[in-house]
Figure 1 (cartoon, rainbow, N blue to C red):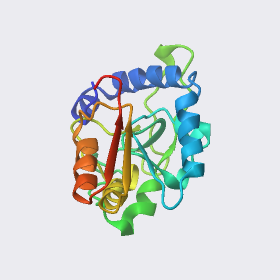
Figure 2 (cartoon, rainbow, N blue to C red):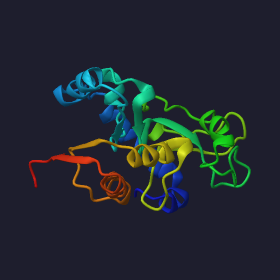
Figure 3 (cartoon, rainbow, N blue to C red):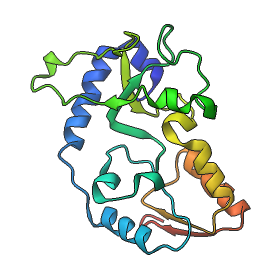
Length: 197
């Protein structure tokens, strides 16, 4: 279900599914892990960046500085114009070109609260171009970009990284593995905290 191809095939059904997930995430609260990262950010000398695969927005709720946060898999509480649909605000726009970042990010808006009755969920349309909206989530058949996921920023930071602290991921997706390789190449100290390893 987590592909653009599937969303394109059955957008209304998948929109309802994402709204269901958003309804669950809305009830979640930051835990001690989130607040520990905020404290680490406060204590860190020099440059600090938090890169997360979480889509729930809990790092911001815990107090993470937005300017030092890269949510590389997006946010379930945000939606955007579907750039792969002809006629959309961002159709054929290069989402890695810095000249297009403001234009792309201007299409992002809060996801509406889930309807009380799932049958009442409606696929939202972009108020500017009228094309369907989509969750601001990175799907498995998509690639990272700078406009929505700050991917170029992340990789640039990895090339100049002194210490990379890896917490709570199995490193099963390509992006995080690429980050580790880039940090290793830069000579960074890699610290992995994972009870499964």
